[in-house]
Image 1 (cartoon, helix red, strand yellow):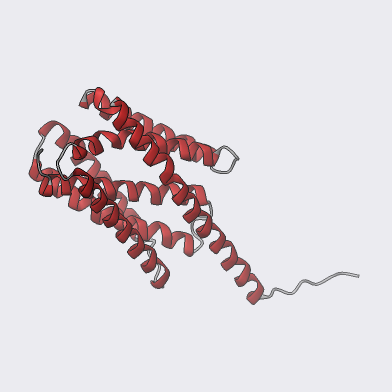
Image 2: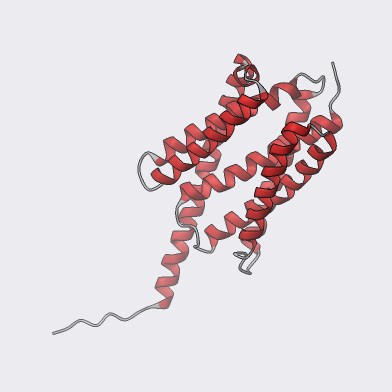
Amino acid sequence: MTQTTTYDPTTAGASSVGERNRVLRNTYWLLALSMAPTVLGAWIGVQTGIARAMSPGIGLVVFLVGAFGFMFAIEKTKNSAAGVPVLLAFTFFMGVMLSRLVGVVLGLSNGASLIMMAFAGTGAIFLGMATMSSIIKRDLSAMGKWLFIGAIMVLVAGIANFFVQSSALMITLSVLVIGIFSAFILYDLKRVQDGLETNYISATLGVYLSIYNVFQALLSLFGIAGGREE
C-alpha cells in the first residue's frame, strides 16, 4: 500500500510566514543586543583614547582591515554557535573605532546634546524604515545593486576626502550616506520579510552597518553645523 501526500498551500504558507517572522524577530533582538557592545566600545575608546592615539592614516587602515576581517569571520560562522559572539565582538570593535568621532564631538560645549540628537535621529530613521518595510508590498530586490554601487562610490569618495579634508565634501558625503544607508535599512528588512534572507545573523549585520553609518553621518553633520567650541 502506498501513501499519497496532498500539498496544502494554506499550511505551507503559514509555515513560511512563521519562519520569516522568526528570522525578523531574532534580527531585532540581536540588533538591540549589539548596541550594548557598541556603546561599551565607544565608552572605553573615549576613556582610554585608544582610537585618537592612532594617527589618522593608521586609524583608517585598522578600521578597514578590522571591519572587513570581522565581516569575513561573521560570514564564515553565521551558521554555527560562534556566529553571535563574533558579531558582538565586531560591534564592540566598531564602537571603539567610533570613539574618535564621539570624543571630538564631546569636546564641544554642546557635544552631549549633539550625540543625543544623532541618536534620536537614527532611531527615528530606523523606526520609519522598519514601518515602511512592513507596509510596502512591492519587491525591492532591484534596489540592491544601485544601493551597493552608491555605497562603494561613497566609500571611495570618503577615502579621497581623508586626504583632501574638505568640509563641503564631508557635508555632501554625510547627506548621501544618510540617504543611501536609510534605504539599505528598508531593503535589508524587506528581504527578511520577503523570505529572501533566512539567516538572522547576516540580516543583523546588514542592518547594524546601516544604522552605524547613519548615526556616524548624522553626528558628523551636527558636529560641523551645530557644534559650539568650549
